[in-house]
Amino acid sequence: MNTTILISDLHLSEHTPALNQLFKQCLNQWQGRIDSLYILGDFFDVWIGDDDDSNFIREIKSLLKQFTSHTPIYFMHGNRDFLLGKQFAAETDIKLLEAPQLVNLYGQNYLLVHGDELCTDDIAYQQFRAQSRNPLWQMAVLHKPIAERRMLAGQIRQMSETRKNSEGKSEISDVTENGIEALISTQNHQTLPTLIHGHTHRPAIHEHSYLNQPFKRYVIQDWANDYGGYLAVDAQGVHVHELKL
Ligand code: MN
Image (tube, rainbow, N blue to C red; front, side, top):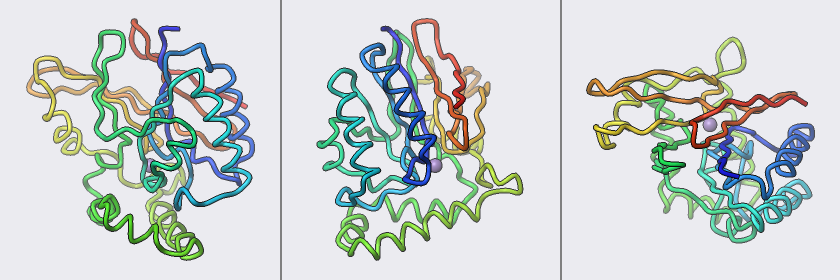
C-alpha cells in the first residue's frame, strides 16, 4: 500500500475493446493494493447522461463497483465526460471531485485538474466550457431525448477533433503560462503544490516558478491504440509508468 495512482484521458468507449481490457487488468492489479485511484477526466470518450445504457457501460460500472468495495476511486470531470453525474457515482461508489482539487498525499500537496481549463488561448472552447459547466444548461441538455444528446455529443467530439494538430495526436491548444499562473496564484505562495493534469495528450514533467517559488507540473499519459500510462504517488514523490498491451 502507501501508493496512490492517477490516470486520465483513457477515452474508453465500446470502440476501444483493447483499452477496456487494459483498464480491467490494471484494476485487477491495483484493487486492494493501493490507497486510492484518481481518474482526472476523459475517462469516457463521451458521456451523454447517466441514463445511457449499453453492455459496455454496464460492464464498466460493474468493474468500478467491484473495485470501490476494496479501494476508493475519485473522479474528476473532463471535457468529454462532464455530464457524468450523481446517479453514476451512486451506482459505482466513486466519489466525484470538484476542480481544482488540492490533495495532500504522504505529506506533499498536489493540485489536480483535468487541464482543459488551462488552455486559455482557445477562446471558443473556453466559452463553451463556461456554458456547459452551468447546472441549468446541463439540466436542459439532460432533459433532451437520448438521440438528440448523441448528436450533441458528436458535435462536442468534432469540436475537439478539429482542434487536433497535424500529428493527429494532440489538441491544438496546449496549456498556457497564463492559465497555469491563474491557477497556481490561488495557492499558498510559500509552499506551492505540484500540479498534475491530463487533457493535452502531451505527457511530460515541466519545471515552473511563480513568484520565485519553483513547482513541478506533471502531464498524465493518455491511453490510445495499444498503450497507456499512469502516475504513482508515494512518500518519495511521483513516478511515471507506461503501459503496453
Ligand atoms: Mn480532455
